[in-house]
Image 1 (cartoon, helix red, strand yellow):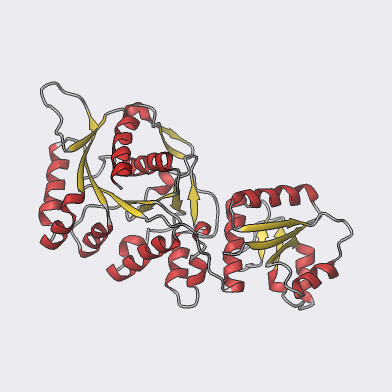
Image 2: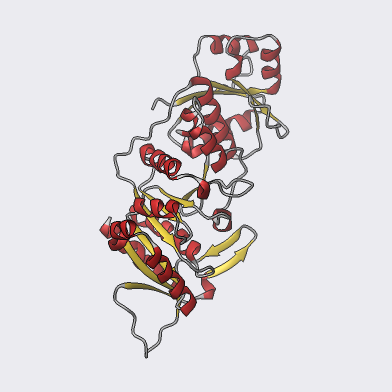
Length: 364
C-alpha cells in the first residue's frame, strides 16, 4: 500500500517535530513531511491541498477554521490540531494531546473515509488460531490466553492478536488501554456496513498493544459484541483478520458452552486449550462440555484439543499425565496495579506457559 502522505504545519515547532517523528516511528503507513518554515502562508497550504500534493494536512485550528469559512477546495483534507478535546461530531479536528495511538487511529480512519483506499499488509505468513476455553470460571483461562500469546510474540517475533469472545471481556484487565475513538464496536460497524468496509482494513486503528508487543482490540464501553455474532458474521470477521495478513497467531479466549456459535468457533482453531484447575468441579464441567459437543464438531476438533491444568501443586502421590500441560500454582506471579493485573512470566507460572507456547510454535 502506498503510504499516507502527511504535511504537518503548526505554530508550535517543537510539537510539530515531536509529532512528526512519533508518527514516522509509529508504523510504516505514514510518510511525514514537517513544515517548520515561519513564512509558509495559509494560501500556500490551500494551494498544496488543491493540487493534492499530500493526502492529509495537520494544521493549526485557525487555518482549518479559515479554510472551512471560505469553502476551500479539498478543505476536508485539512485536520485541525485542537488545544482541547473535540466532540465526536468534529471529525476533522484532532485533539493534539490525545496521545499517539488516538491521533494515529483518527488519521487512518479519516484517510480511508476521504480516499476510499484500503490498507493491505504485505505478509505471506499463514495465520493460525489458538483457542483457550474452560467450562468452569476462575480457573485462569484469560491469564493463560494472554500469557501464551505474549510468549508466542517472544518466540516468533511476529504480531499476535488476542481476541476475547467473553461477554465481559478481559482485555482491559491485562493490557493498558489507550484512549481512542475506535474500538471493536467501531471495527464491526465499519466492516459490516456497506460502503465502509475499507476503513476496517486499517485494523491498527482499532487495536492497542502492550509492552510485550501483544495486540488486542480496544474494548467497547458496553458489552462485547463478538459473542453475539452469527456463524456467518463470525466467519466474515475471522476471515477479515486472516486477509489482513497482519498476524501470525490469533489467540481467542471463549467460554466453553455448547452452542452452534461456539462449535463454529472451535472449528476455526488449529489448537484448543481446555483449562481446569484440578478441582473436581472444573474437571467435570470440562468433560460435560466435551461430551455434549456435536459428533461432527468433536470428530473435526478432537485431535486439536489439549488439556491444561492450572494452579497445579506437585504431588508425589499423583504423577502428571503425559498428555496434559501443568502450570504450577504461583500467586506471586500476579500483582494488581493501577492498570489492572500484571503477570510475571519469569516465575513458575511463566515456565508452565512457556512449555505450551514452545510446543505450539514447534507444531504450527
